[in-house]
Length: 387
Image 1 (cartoon, rainbow, N blue to C red):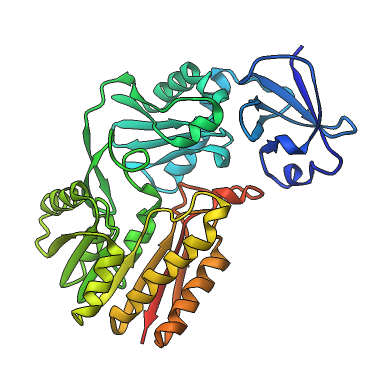
Image 2 (cartoon, rainbow, N blue to C red):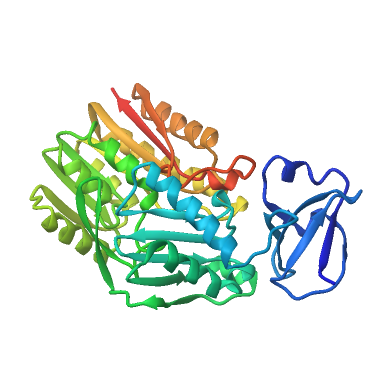
């Protein structure tokens, strides 16, 4: 007999609203026996069926729901969900590089699949999905017919599931670097060592939007491999790409060469220090991009994260010419849009500049948001005019 989880009274409200997770502290009792990672049924205290999902006692997320009562997590189901997710992206016009499966938002919790040309890069973040790796790979091969599939499950969150970090080829052959095309630009992606599954695909629409605002002298902070820099270079006079990573800046130079862009220069250093140095040197820019890494990964770090956002945005406001543009981002769901925007408003007030909001953007549509699961809406991108 498998597990059946009964929730405490009224704890089903968020699940009925769309959240696909059951936390251990929401459980009234558990009947039956099985192994970690196995399917279990979830019911209200009164016995009403709510859904089925993988169970893991080692995780704070006890059950990840994704099945109805008459569904099984076999290869046919994985292919059906993967095919449906991919079809949605193709209908949106995505072709060469995009997120093909976005975990809970596509009905496949803890599974991420990114497409880079003829190759796939996947992350498997839960024990239940890990135990179904063979079925998932088979479904991916059937849907995409890729030349190779790489697993990039080298993320710390797997430890909460009792899993170790893993990187390795799951199918075919995967070269270390792959050439993709994004927004009409060529990009060389390091699938084995690049950020996330190789590259930040979630910013593609925001990078394209930058072309409308980038002009004169542009400063791209936390530039990584140069996605924002390349798009800015198409409409600006000059771009200065700043990052603490020498290897990231080498990627910027390589990608600039691939696109025959000669107006991009790089500077290596801590962005916080660089902004202060530019201020001391009385340098000014027409456009500044702030796309920092996640400043917090837990609720307890939110206060410090907001201080970090305040500091870098205050520095950016002071460095912008009159009529300049600031593109400022946050990629952690722990800092929701209202808090992020309020933090930027406070920095604007402290700077003494007149600031207007032109656009409020989010992650690209291949990273859809699941209503009821606020964690799936994580990326914020504000485009501001500074006078």
